[in-house]
Length: 505
Image (cartoon, one colour):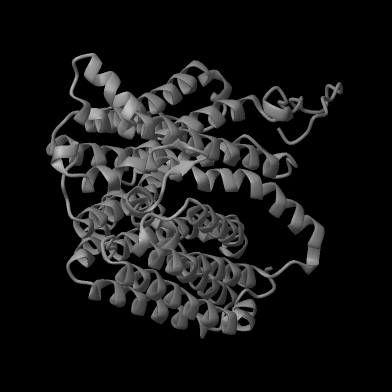
């Protein structure tokens, strides 16, 4: 795959031409992974759009009737687990079954989880969450690995291929809340259920079932086009006289579930979060003052980890506190058209699709004059802080009734700018800073930042109160202030972090 030249000389090896039969001249397997990931993200974001709303809806409305704090704690633990279990899923694929089989099995488990949530009981709700988290942990890291495996190291199509793949993610994330939200919340669908003699209070479960259908469609695409992936994602060969690393698997699994359990305690004991922050700062200082270059770069990685964790703690409230604000305090109406509040979960994807080409052009245009990675992280934190500053006057205005949709449109715009500055930049920076022997571990650390940020988002969202505008304004202001302080600290540390990076931009 490294060359498109086919040699006619009998003394030279035959080199296969590049596969350009897929989307935009990309490998054929990219089309398979594009649609499989699109439908998997459809299932994930479709269910996530309903999760906090279903848990906080009264039993008389078909929901579970949980208070906000309890529901936000569950939401945070679930979204944290999805990312945290990616480390375990990657280890299983790398050492036991291979990426191709891990994606298939993960997809089956995810679909089973969504269909389990379609059943009307609290027990099946929790069981479904566990299954979706386990399945996503298997699928999510390994489908990305297979995208990379379609290209040789020198293939110039690689970055474009990942951009196309990322577009599939956002198409799925855009469509999902529109479908599942309609089924779960719209008066029209509830009336249709009643006309069929079915209980309209069970409309939530139709939304969860639709998420399962999405994952099933992804599996159908994956299986029907399996031949396009026959050359990637193989199970690792077992050397003679050696066995699979079952002991290490046990340790990784134990560590993953122990961390999930420890972070679950933060619902009751917030000191756990402060202890975690103190541990991260100690680790940064430990590596920063060591003499070797690799240690200094690890210190820089941990600074980015800390910043990303804070960023995701605000950004990932999209599905919790912001979802509740949209449902309870926003006029969900545009030009006379009323829409379910869960439709707001599609807005971030719209902004990503619109802004991603702009940022790609901007970085190319600026070239070597573009901001350094630490400065981009600083700007990312700034924009996510500004998004919650914006919500302070919006919260105060709720004293006079529901606010217009412009507030949330602007919030998602600011947060998406922050995402464009931090998320893809962070992924790229991790691969450049990581010592080659520690690349897998560093990518696991990057997933861990998202995991802990998601959990912290759930902890923070537990303080959301929709019935007191003054307290709600304070809720947004305190978080904006906290991230603002973190932004100023990171800004002051930019020269130091650049030194720690030892020449890497």
